[in-house]
Length: 372
Image (cartoon, rainbow, N blue to C red):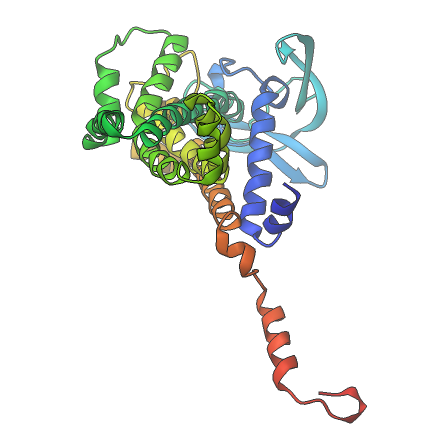
């Protein structure tokens, strides 16, 4: 990890991505504290309220706005009405991490006379920032859980197929190819449409996770199978077989650790794919439904027409968060792939300045006085 951190410093995009993802996951873990309101808290008189946080000579404030047209929901800011924002303000009570009772939130208006909308409000006057923070819990965790289950299935079936070969190999590979023949998105939509549409949020979360896991394992299983097939011929594996160690122990204790670098890169690149799949299902109405919140359900509910985007552009905030998380995982995955590349251990990565200085130092003759 120390070596990877040093390598990460040479990749600014990967470093920024790591900091961004760490921030997002911390906000997800402490959503009740970070978000000023619960995801269901509504201010009916402030439908489609624009972001009202301002930085002025008075500090950071929440500026009041008045409705000009209640049909198109146009607002005008009131110049002299500012409410200063404070840290650790008193608000709605909650249980931090599920067991710490408190009513303190990271920021808000101290006197609670006017709500603070960091990213604006939706069609029911609910704070969009709070809903994005709470929605990240489903969108981000479903990516990791689906990746973990899919990777376990890939290691299990791919390891058995590559190690035993023969009829076992043929049966598992034909079974995986059956899933790979059908485009992943179509298969996900088909499996989800077969199930009941009246499931609650918890059931939908569990079903979507299982469906994504079942669809995602075949490609990784084929890769694991090829690696196991080549590693099982190594001397340390043959020695383990001669000692009478069970095959399952050999696979998971001696062979799988040799593929750790590939598995780490696979996780980093698979998580955004599962997040996008959940978002697609929720956007099409086959995923998470109210009262639960995910980024896909936010996009489906808020971005219904093009007029909404032109009149209320802050409704695109969940899209930007989804795009940022996806790109961050991809940048980190690229950095991990380059770090574990065998050529990286032989050919170090030099900066352009270092290369030029070495070239000039080698070919420019030295003169008296030490000048070149």
